[in-house]
Each structure stands twice: as C-alpha cells, then as structure tokens.
Image (spheres, rainbow, N blue to C red):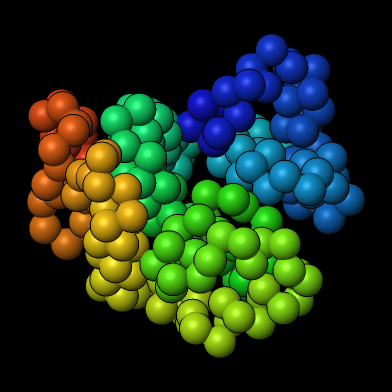
Length: 202
C-alpha cells in the first residue's frame, strides 16, 4: 500500500478488496471509475481478476513493488532533511508520465518545481487555470521529460534556483539519473539506496 502512495488507506480493507475484485479490464470497474489513478495502478499491478494467483509471480508485483516502496521511503526520508530534495525526487518520478500541463497544475508539488525552475511567481496560482496552463505550455515541452538527460537538466536548474532562494537549507538536489548524487544533509545509507534503486518500476 505504501509503495503506491496508499498507506493511509491500509485500514480500508473492504474498499481495496472491492477495487481488486473489479479489476481494470472493464472500463466501468470500480478502480477505473475512481478519480485517483493510484488505485488503478495498484489494481493493475495486482491484477488477480486477469491472472488469479499467478499475479504475484510477475516481476512488477515483486521487485517492482519493492522499488516503489523504497522510492516512497526515500522521498519521505529526504524530505525531512530538505524540502527541495523531496520535491525533486517526486518530480523525477512523476514527470515522465505527464500528458498535459493540467496534471502539473493539479498537483502542488509538481507545480512548485515548475514554478521555481521556470521562474514563474507563485502568485500566478490565483490566475485563471487556462491562463496558467498557457504560460507553462509556452515555456515547457512535456515530451522532454521522457528523455532522462533533459529531465536531469531541468532538475539541475530547479536545484540551483531552489538553493539560491533557500540559502538557509541549501543542499544539492541529487541528480540520480546521471552520476552519483551529492548531498550535505542525507545519510550515506539513503545515498546508497538511491544508487541501487531501479527507478521507473518494472
């Protein structure tokens, strides 16, 4: 549950059972009707309706889930030391999946990274949503986030501007796509795990 960002729903066994029992093959299934896509991702990984007991033998349900769990834990641990690190790690995980700028506008963490990296004032969040989307679209090509090098360059820019704006807590945001990360505030254990993780899932 934590691996899929659903730790707060661990108590809701009936809800999760309903999601699993409906699967995802039917467009009108319970998981597909939920606005939060995390449930669909969970059911897609543990698709008992389609594969029955064999579903837990697939790599995505085993090592893929472990990788996601470690990534979630890493983001939480890093965030306790430096908010910029947490934002960068989250953005790196979500950015390749983005299909339109409205997904950025709907998630405060993603929007914060984009605002900082592009020098967009936070106050623009009060503007008309279409105007905000146009501003971001004019300065950002979402397709670039599918390229690890371009995503890394974007995060490097975010890191530099974040540290410039937050000198009291400045620490290098890890470039975990190319080369080893360097930090001033994270433990060696976390850095080691960052090197071992297979980001992007299985």
